[in-house]
Length: 113
Length: 113
Image 1 (cartoon, rainbow over the protein chains, first blue to last red):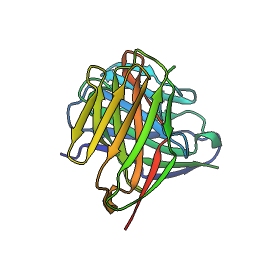
Image 2: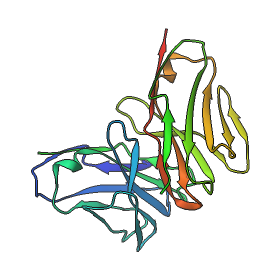
Image 3: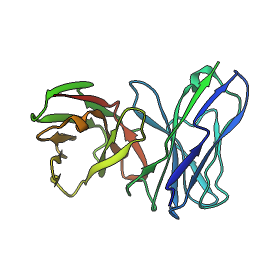
Image 4: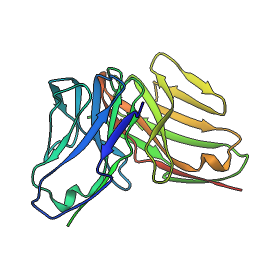
């Protein structure tokens, strides 16, 4: 049981490049979410999903896309990377809602030059 | 949207003393209040949570209290140990929405031996 996994661990992009951050969980959780963590700002919700085929926006969705084709996977796509997207990204999953215990992945540190 | 303020931003305590972190929230409809601990370079992990129908909850050396009237909740750590050194985040649901959490900016706790 691996829990929540994320790849890659580190990534450097140039402004304008696109990429996908991968997130997977093996706990059969319906709820999955993406957060970004910036110094002095805590964790901010980007997008979330309550099940396969269902996604919704969080508080900072601009510049990011998500999809949920399976229960296990919830990738985050950066369409055209900007320096303001330099951050640590965490994926999390829980049984059904954000009010259930959320299990976080190890994070991806992204630098946009 | 929900605004969660967390104080203090840093806290240094002598080993064996108590530590208290306080968070305030803006939406009186918020109904779930978790606390996460994040050790350096690690992922956030849930340590305790409380729901709006409960005033206090304890788990060994940690406790959380909720004052709905004043819209604030606090984390209490007693008999602090070096392994309690970490960043602690509070969070609250965005109103009665069970699918979105807003996080505080975090408190860096250092336990001096």
